[in-house]
Image (cartoon, rainbow, N blue to C red; front, side):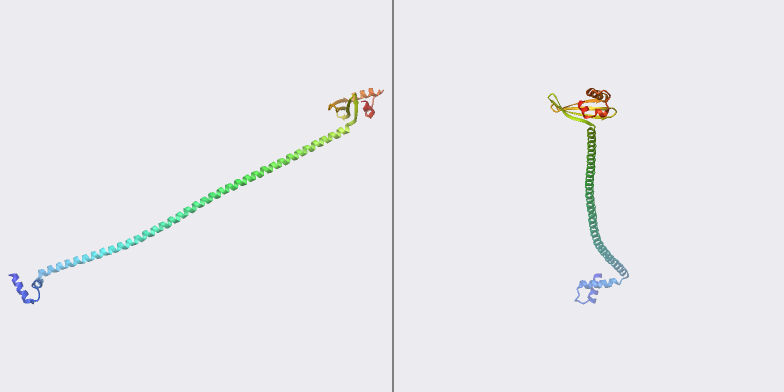
Length: 246
């Protein structure tokens, strides 16, 4: 009955050109909406739909904003990470350069230290060589000077001895004894006791015979050889004839 009433109302309000179903929906909608309970329910449903639509829109905006912020933060994070990597790379390069420079400096200092040691060793060697050579030359010079002085003293002593020997030489002669030729020399020594030294050199045998006579023996021999009646003086004993007899 209710469907027949709605169908009649549809045919009366709508022309025949509209489809029956559409017309029915339009009629039912316009009739039902006027009801108070239906209108409140529809507004309530509309509000819920609007709220759902608005919440979906807000959620979509929030998600979009979050995604955009995520993309922005990711891009910033990537930039910061790349910047941090570049900074780390640069700092590692700086530290590596400093480390290599310190190693090179240490190697250079070590080479300089070794070079200083070599130079000091060379200088010490040269100085020791110079010092000991100079000391050796001075010692050699002093030794030569000492030898020269000693030789000078020896020559002076021999010269003095020869002068004394020549000064004390009283008689020298070459005599023949049988078949032997000999050289006779008489020396006078006036030390603590006056003595005469007779030296006889035999060339054939290359031998030298020495006879030392004191004053009394010389006087006794000469007085006996000269047949003197009294005591002979030194002037008389030192005459060539007396020495020849001696």
